[in-house]
Image (cartoon, rainbow, N blue to C red; front, side, top):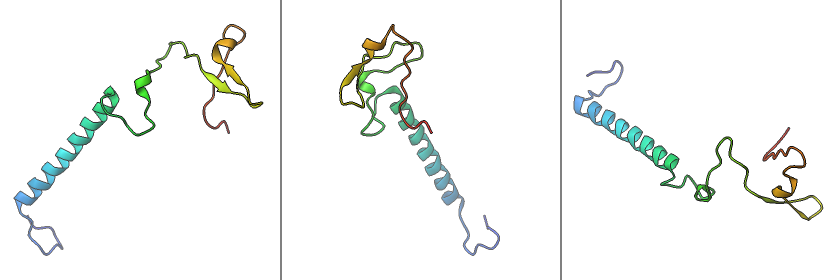
Length: 92
């Protein structure tokens, strides 16, 4: 196979090797992502899925969160009084 403007003739074996390497890399990446999704591998050092997962409709865990005045508030103290909305991150 001759590429126009490319001085070196590239053999079929080289093309086949490059295609197989790309296919193996894609398969390895897909396998890695599947193992992370199943929880077999950790995604990074902040991955804390071993504590469990929340799914839609599950009750929130009883968290103890710091208040601005330095005290703590537990989520169970607020249940039943009024709706509770927890926002993690920026609200700008």
